Length: 165
Image 1: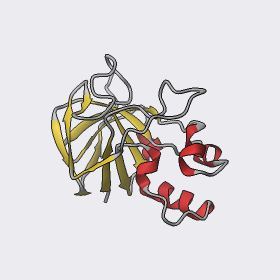
Image 2: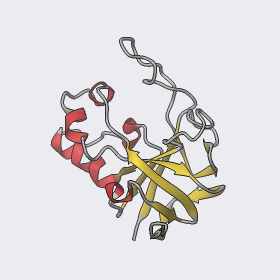
Image 3: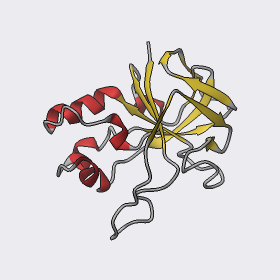
């Protein structure tokens, strides 16, 4: 059964728009729940109402990948917040949700694409090659389809069948 472990938001962009410059220092804030608004994102997050129909209104990252990075790079205390994804979850194949509409804990979502890692991952972790290590498992970008509250803990996942033509 899927289990939501952590929620993270940030009021500002540390890396977006900083190519060739130092990152900003907006804090990553851990939350106990997330307020989601359909078509807009997470209340209080830097991507809330950022662009119309934005594909990354909420992002997911696999707890197993967090642990794999810790193990591969000998970083046992690396916080899961370093990856700057909103939801850390376990027990779900995130890549299998790309192109799918699904419901997770009562929230309807559209899995749009992999949340591809970028070169900032190396700087954020302090290790070379983290970006390469994360290719194909950088997380999932989603659009939010209904207003809802998302809570931590075990949850149900239902993947909807594709619409019939």
